[in-house]
Structure formats: structure tokens, C-alpha cells
Amino acid sequence: MRYIAFWAVLFGWLWSADATLEVVKGVQSLPNLAIEDGSAIANDTSKRMYAMLNADMNVISLFNVDDHYAFSTYESLTPAPNHTNAQYVLRYRLVDDGAGGLRTDIRLLQNGTELFEKSYILKQSEMLVFLSHTIAYDINTKLGGGPLEWMKRKVLLVRHSSPRHSDIVAADYTLSYQKTVLSGGMYGFAKWANNEQTDFYYTSLADFKPTIYKMSLVNGKKEKIISADGMAVCSDVSQDGKKLLLTLAPSGQPDIYLYDVDTHGKTRLTDFSGIDVSGQFISNETVAFVSNRFGYPNIFSKSINGSAITQLVYEGKNNSSFSAHKDYLVYKVRESTGGYGGTVFNLHLLSLRSNGVRRLTSGGENDFPRFSGDGEAVLFIKQEGSRSSVGIIRLVLNKSFAFPLKIGKIQSIDW
Amino acid sequence: MIKNVAFLSAAVAMLLLSGCSKEPAIDATAKQSTTTQTASSTVGTEKSNVIAPVTTASSEDSSASNATNGSEGLVSILFDFDKYNIRSDMEGTMNADAALLKNKTVKLEGNCDEFGSDEYNFALGLKRANTVKSALVNSGMNADSISMVSLGEGNPVCLEKTQECWAKNRRVDFKLP
Image 1: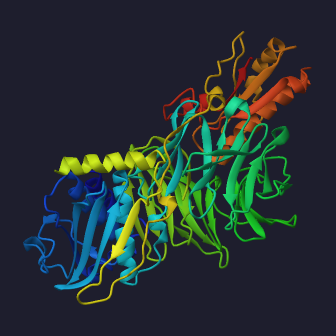
Image 2 (image 1 turned 45 degrees about the vertical axis):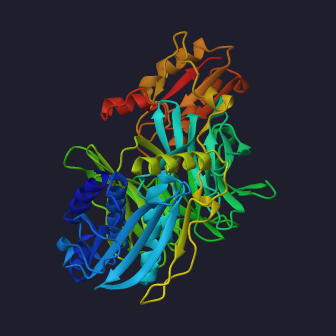
Image 3 (image 1 turned 180 degrees about the vertical axis):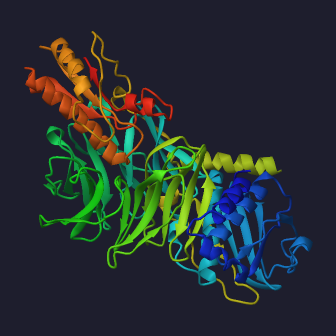
């Protein structure tokens, strides 16, 4: 049902005035792909697998994916009767592996010829969607598609569960898999601590003393990093995991600090009397951050070793949220009031090299932009009326996807 | 049969989730195709694919959630959108609160509406608390008897999407020990 809704949202976006329009014209030239369930017995799990694969194969953008489910014989080299127009067939079957796991066999056929076959054992049945992502990743790699490492990565988010309570949740990139990893207190600002995504930083507001902890997702072990009066946030982690950008507020004054994980030493980078927050590395020597030094939140940069401040964004009056990747920023801009009475927040992409700006979204409240690790995609949350969705923008392909979302109020996201 | 498979999977998942196993979440093997070569990599065997058990809060974590609201006639100070200066219409309330807090210890909680990013809102809430602290110190309170924290948009008193509701959430609350 969730993935039926996925289609509704996807098509809803395609006809909207979003950046996806250009790609719609190109869909016709993609080869047709049909996905077929070759399990011995079709059941809810195998049909759910179909829906997940259907969504993922759309996202890899190598095919025009037929959205008609079909049950067929796994060994057959020909498409099912309702898929005769398909040049490609992705057939899968789910099998009990006899050892407590779920084995999934897949084969990719092109005009009756097998291109690829592979088997997977899934031990954690609740993570079925990650298996779908892995299959899509493997097929994309086999066919020479663009980089898709981000498809297999986990998303970390904090959601408000009730006033003064929040949960930290691990999810897949569609947020269809969600597992609460920390609950019972008031938390915020969960941030991956390493590329392997085995550890993360978060803030706990225990005893009114904001404290940053590092927690392992493997064994649940927590380690206290630093606490500060008023505010303590881990805003960014360097590529090697050795340096952190923190927002600390001794004496009630929020500023950005560089923290050395090994030595525990910290260096204050900003000293403006207003608000400086959300530091992010845009190189080893430079950080971007949000400041209200001109009277409203906007995005600036400074050298770690220098004092000069550079304004990076010259549009909008409420640019308080952004994500940085090398020479690119994606940031939230508050725009005109929407037709239904709400306020419109759109995401814009800025090239720091050319200063070119491209609007990525259209309508609604678009927030929490996060670049993938390779900068190929942007994940964000869209709220339009009562409808929420998680969006994926593949920047190079100029193509957007949306997955319906039911999670409540989100406080922060990391990818 | 299928139910048994599902049960089996769930049982093993429980073992993995409880940290009793180092088995990979997804193990993949590629067979040689009859017509073309296939990949031979093994994917999904990283320990990063294993997500740990739900971890409940420590007793310290819960303490932030159990605070009681201030009493003794204290009234929250309200702020304008994206501002942290005390409005002229709140000056009387601020003076009355300062008189009630004389010679007491107080915790100030800064709060925001739902606009603004996660970090910016926390900073904004803290600046609001800091403004109230300055006003209390100027009225004669000892700065050491005042502590502050920002709750960002995490402690709303009103959940509707209206101007009136957002205005109620842009506030500083007083908490007495």
C-alpha cells in the first residue's frame, strides 16, 4: 500500500513544476523493465518485495519500469504474458534458507538472455528493504549506472514523540524501515560519527545540561564527549572522523568550535554576539555556517585559521538550513506565501565555483536537505498540506522521487 | 510453511538485534551466469548493517522530561518571530517575574515556534533565555542563581498551525527547583 502511494506521489511530482520535468521527456527512451515474482508461493512478503524493487529500480533510472505485478516461473527465460513488451525482466524468488534466514535469488534477463544472477541471504527479516536497495545497487553497478553508494546507507533522524520527549531512529533512505535506537529522553542532533555508520553523536538534554554523547549502533555503548551550559550540538564530522564542528554556548552565547576527537581540545571559530550555528566542513580549511549577523539567518563561510567572514547566499531572508558538499550548497529558502495559506520553503542548489543557483523543489515546505556522501543525491523532507514525504533528488539526472512518510515531527536528519 | 519461514526469520532477527551474533545482515553471492560473467563481490557483510537493540534512556536522560512547570505566579515571557529582545508589552510581566524571583534559584527554558532550522531554533531559544537572564540580573538577581537551557521547538504549549499558536510557543519559561 505504501508503494502504491509512492507512485501517486511520484506522478504528482512529475506533473508539478518541479525540476523533474526535463527528465520526464527522456523516460520514453529508456528500455522497459518488468519485475516478476518467481517465488514458489506468492505471499505478502514476496509482494512487498516486488513493490520495494519496483521503487528502487525507478530510482536507479536505467529503465522504464512496468508497474504491473506478475507471478511467473523463476527459471523461465521469457516474460510473463502481461510483460511481453519488456526488454528486461528482473525475476526474484524468496526461499527459506533452512538456517533461519531468507534467501533471495534474482536474475536479470535481456530479451531472453540471462545477464546477471545472484543470491542473497537476509538474516534480519525486518530489513527487507535494505535487501531491495542492495539488489538495485548491484544491478546498477552491473549495467554501468552512476554511483549509488547512498542507496545502501542508513539515515539517522530525531523525531519528537511528545513535548520534552524525542526518539533517535535509524532508517533506510526511503524511511520505510525505521528502528528506534534511543528513546525515553529528550534528544537532538543525531549525526553519524564515521563513514561505516556504526557510531553516531547526539545531544541529550539530561538534567538541563546539554551533553554530546557518542553511541555505538552495534552494542549500544555510550561515551560522553562534552557538555556545555545552554547548548551543545555536534553539527558536522570531518571525512576522517577526527574533527568535529560543535555549537557550544558557554555564557549563553552560541558559537562554533572545532573539536579534536583525539586530544579533546577545542578551538573557538566564531565570536559574533548574535547566533552562529550549524558549522559544516566545505574543505579541510573552510567551514560554512548559519549566522544572523545581518539581522536574519543566512549562510556564511570562514577559514578555520582566518577571521574573514564571507557571505555565501544572496537570496532569501530565512536561510537557516543547509547541507554542504565540496563546491555545492543546498539550502532552504523561505519564499512567498503558498496558495493554501501556508508558507513556501524551497530548496536551492548553489555552486560556490560559478555562483549559479538552481531551484530544486516547488511548493510546500521543503526542509532538512542532506547531501549524500558523494554529492550525487539530496535527501529532504517535504510537507505539503497534510501530506509528508521524503524526497530524493538525483542532481546529475535532474530527477526527483518521493516516498510517503508517516513519522511525526522531525527534529534533525543525517545521511 | 511460509509462516514458519517468517517465524524463523523473526527469531534469528531477534538474536541479531540482541547482539548475540556477529552474522552479517545480508550475505550475497553471485553465480556464474550461463551467458555472461557476474560480479563476485560480497556485499552487505559489514557490521554496519547490524543495528543494535532499542536502547532506553538512562535515569539522567529522563530528568529533562520530568521537570515541573514554574508556579508562584510566574508568567512566561513571549517573543516576536525570530527575535530575542523583550517586547515592550512584556516589560511589565518581566518586572513582576523578577520581583517574584528575588533571592531564589531559577532555571530558564527558551522555546521556539516550528520555523527555523533545528540548530538555529535551539540557539534562538537560548538567546531568549539569555535575554531574560540579563533582565533578572539587572533587577538585582545573582547570575550564579540562574541557569539556562534551550528546548528549541521540542516543548510546544500549542500544536495548531496558527499565528496565535506559534506566538505562544515563542517563550521563556521559569522553572523553580
